[in-house]
Length: 171
Ligand SMILES: CC(C)(COP(=O)(O)OP(=O)(O)OC[C@H]1O[C@@H](n2cnc3c(N)ncnc32)[C@H](O)[C@@H]1OP(=O)(O)O)[C@@H](O)C(=O)NCCC(=O)NCCS
Image 1 (tube, rainbow, N blue to C red):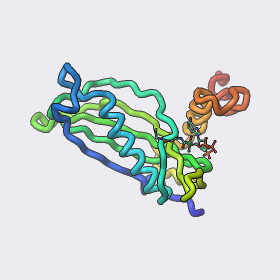
Image 2: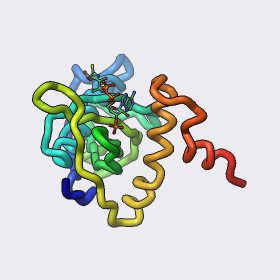
Image 3: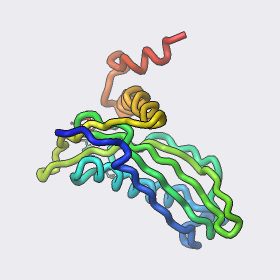
Image 4: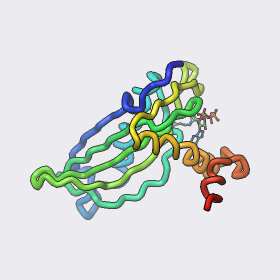
């Protein structure tokens, strides 16, 4: 299976915050944003592997700045690294006040998607080629993030997480 450039998976999604998307403070609800992020990540991972995918996990998300009613939401999603059947997708989220032409960062997050075969079993995906400095940094960090999420998900023993241990043990 031929490796593919990270850039080929880039997905940019834009939404507008409508009244039904907000909480009582008139800001975008976190759950609605996570739903849009799930769609953007699904599209990016499907672009990479050309197969149906499911969400396997969502890493912790901190909402730094609320996105206001009437503002635009921009989500940029890109696959950072593929393992065997799973892919890590990095997302950056901005809000934008279109009238003031002012953009602000809202949050960033990592989602993991798994490609499925016609029998709905995990199937192998192409490797990722990281080209830019940012893509290389994200690619390098992906292994230890994977180990942390698999430990938290009860799928890996901490003793087996060599890269994660090395990261915390270094001076
Ligand atoms: C995700 C899912 C396909 C994994 O299936 P599984 O039978 O556990 O398969 P495996 O143990 O072989 O794992 C397959 C891949 O998923 C990854 N995976 C499993 N659990 C994971 C988790 N909690 N976080 C990140 N990756 C995970 C494994 O690391 C493996 O990746 P790799 O092949 O690149 O090493 C399965 O749990 C599933 O279908 N879950 C429901 C998905 C869904 O419906 N999502 C929508 C939200 S409800």
